Length: 145
Image (tube, rainbow, N blue to C red):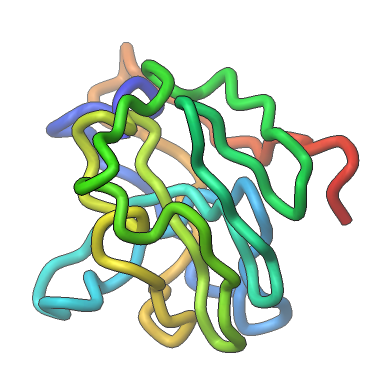
């Protein structure tokens, strides 16, 4: 999740919020990796159920609205063979998630959808080491509802 989070940081995870509402676009979630639930991943929610996600020429669009993603380390440079899920409709009960370091991220563009049931919680705060304290905020995606 570089540059948002760094290796070795400790993160405070809110496990309560998603008992009252589902994850939203832009949320950074901690979840069990769907292909090996013994591993936890931290990823950003790009698409929610019903969304149409398209990744082309290094840009991500949701429901035909290009996302402004200032948190991304570099725009994606995916070879067609590396992007199995680059034009998809997010099914009910699932999320489309991506890492902020797109060119070095194992995420939905490779392994598909993240079941909402795998979400452990929302990343709220990186609190260790102290010089790197970071409070998470949800980006605004104008044009998306």
